[in-house]
Each structure stands twice: as C-alpha cells, then as structure tokens.
Image (cartoon, rainbow, N blue to C red; front, side):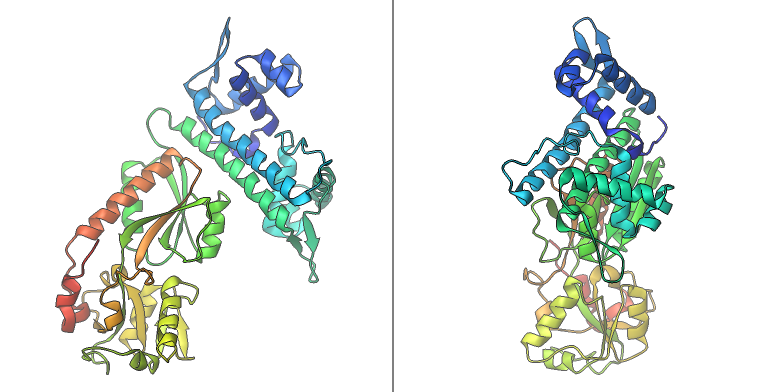
Length: 438
C-alpha cells in the first residue's frame, strides 16, 4: 500500500466506515448517519480505493470487516473518542444547559480543510503564513476560522499587541484532540501497511540529555533489522517535547523525567539508571580532595546542562540549600562534547551522567570529583534515571513498537555491561567500575 497523508482521508467518509462496522450494514449506517445508502456505499468504496485494501466482505447477512477492516475500525473508534472528549471539554467550558452539543465538529462531520486551517494557524500564528503552507489564500484561512468560531460560538484566536494570533485555552485543547485524531489515522495507515508482518511507517522520537549512548545504538539496530521504518529525532526541552507527545506529534520521549510531569494521559516508564557526577580536568584543585563540599563547589565556575533540565535544577537547589549557589559566570550547553572540551581546558566544573562520561575519548584527562551527596544516587530527589515517556491511552504503531522494544533491549545491554576502566577518572577508577546499577 502506498503511504498516504492521513489528512487526505475525509473524516466524514471515515465516519461512514466506522458506522458500517458498528451496525454491520450500509442500511444501519445510513440510518445512524442520516445519509443515503448510496452515499454510505460511495464513502466506503472511496476509502478502500485510497487505502488500496478491502475493508468489508459484502455478504447476504451484512458487511463483515476483513482483517484490514478490523485494524482500521479499531483505530477509528479512538478517532471518534477524541472528538467526544473535545465535546466534553466544550461542555465544561460553556456551561450552558441549552447549548447545542450535537455540532458537526464533534460528530466528525467537519471538512478536513477547516481542520488543516486550524492546525496551520496554531503552528504559524499568522494567516498569511498558514495560507502559504497550505497553498490557499489568506481569505480561505479566515473563512475557515470564522465558520469554526460561528459553529462553536467561541473565539479560537486573539490578536496580540504585536499582531500575531494567540490561541485561546479552549483552542489549544481543541487542537490537541484534533491532532491526536489524525495521529490515530496515521497509525491505522501504518498498521495496514505492516499487516504482512513487515513493520513500516515513521517513528518520531523526542530526546533529552543524556540519550546519546543508547539512542544511536537503537537507531542503528532498528534500521538494520527493519530498513522499511523511517525515523525522525527531535531535540528540545522537556515541556516542549512532552507537549508534542501529548498532542500526537511524537511517538515517545526519552530522557530524565521532570518532577512536574504528572499528566494522567502520560505514561512515564523507568528505563535505565544513569547516575550523574561532577567532573573536572586532571590537576584541578579539587581533583584529589577526598570529600568535596558544597561550599567548595559554589566557589567554582561551571558549564552545565541547560538550567531547565532536572540535573541542573537539582544542582542549583543542592548548592542553595547548603548556603552557596552557582556562579553568575555560568555556561549552559546541551552537548557533552562541548562540556568535556571546556572542562578539560579550564578550571570549570561540569555535570554529566555516567552514560555520557563513559563515551569520552580514551585520552580525555577528566576526573570525577568525590561529592558525598552524589555517591549514592538512590535518593529519589536526584534525577538519575532515564525514562521512556508514552501517551497513556494510545497503542503504538507497529514501527513504534519495534523501536520501543529495541530501545529497552539496548538499555538492558548498556546497563549490565562492565564499565570500562578508562583514563576518564584515573584517581578514582575503582569508584567508576563499582557503580551499582539497579
């Protein structure tokens, strides 16, 4: 089956397919949808042609889903669920007992063009740029927005003082459900394309430091075993990547969990321990100190991960709680190679996980400082565990399942291997090789 854009499949026609599956007949779907039987038949046939599969066996007793049909119907139930959840959010917002809730938007009877305009406006925040992206006129974008707002009776965007369009809170909620619905359609297409047992489709992964050891290994293994899979990797901060995951733009996020991640629609699964350490160049004044104190750390200059990361927040809090703090002369970087190079050629201290430190160049003259508070990272307040973060109520696509399983296998291999005794921390090699791993 040729890969197709999920937005090219009409929601109205997909609803007709869903109703045929639920009622078992064109007649039943016609009655439930208030459309003629010929319209239902044409809708089903059109979707079958687009997908290049047969969705139903036409029998004397009714329309029986084929194996392809069962795959699509399972996903379409999730699509319908997203629009029902949007309806519930709408009801909570308007709080008007006499308001009509049986609107075309929530019944999946809205044109894809209007939904495309909504998504483009959110992402571009300007009607002209949204129009250019979709290949339509700005007037068309404004018309779609006006019709949506008229139907819902609420404003979806406000113009800011600098002229850009700002989405209202309800508009953001609406967008999330729309994008999740399209994600389910995309997964359905990937499942249909993989029904012969060969996983296909695209996997989009969000990454946070430190994943540069296990992620390349996983990518190489997946593409070696399943060359039909396409992979996209996006870096970013936790809030941005988690928002992308919750909206269906990402299949999973890999990284250290943020303490503020408590959304019920997000599943956070521990994957591998990656203790982090303070390190310095060989010959640094603190290199041979048996127990480095917070006061000594506060007197030093640093290069650390971005301050929004859990590790950097922990370090700042740890120093502040002990009467010190981070120097104002602070460098932030999300790239370990930059951090290691700066630390190796200055008196700055760095903060990095063992997974990153282990892959330092063999000749790297770096040492781990002996900070007692970091010797035993069983303390739950220390963000030393890498997690894989998924949407809680979504079944992964076949390609994403392959990636996820490979990721866990690589994580287990990395976690159980012997730590190499490199020149990384020659004064404390015993400590490195005896790191306890859960």
